[in-house]
Length: 148
Image (cartoon, rainbow, N blue to C red; front, side, top):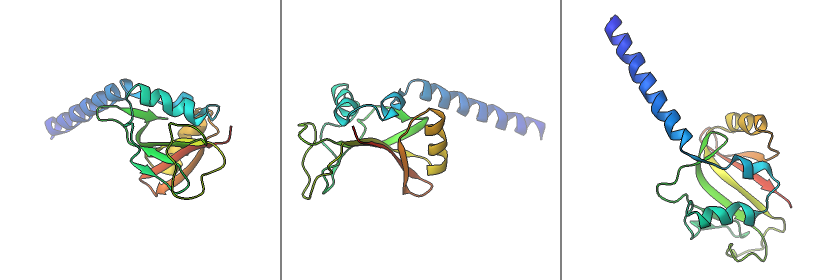
């Protein structure tokens, strides 16, 4: 029985070491989610660095563009895996126009894998004023900045 408990602890420790190594190599977006950037300043470096696909995976009627992380990129925000990056700013050629009335205020952010409560706690610990909202409760959460 002691041998199996030791094997289990070894397996857990190995998984933890592998996970922390992956997180250490991740590209963190925390600093840009301080809500002091513009959508252009947030999205352009990700496009230039090929961290997100250049073609939006979705364009909402209000013109908010959602971009998928590029294959092999490991985007993180506040310790959570980034599922999508989004933004819109009027008259910026990076963003494609939707079919409806565009949002009037610049907006940008990410959708991460994690519950809103845990994401909100990490966002506040980091000192960000970003808005945190459920996308799919207990699974996907949006972190976004409006204004500027």
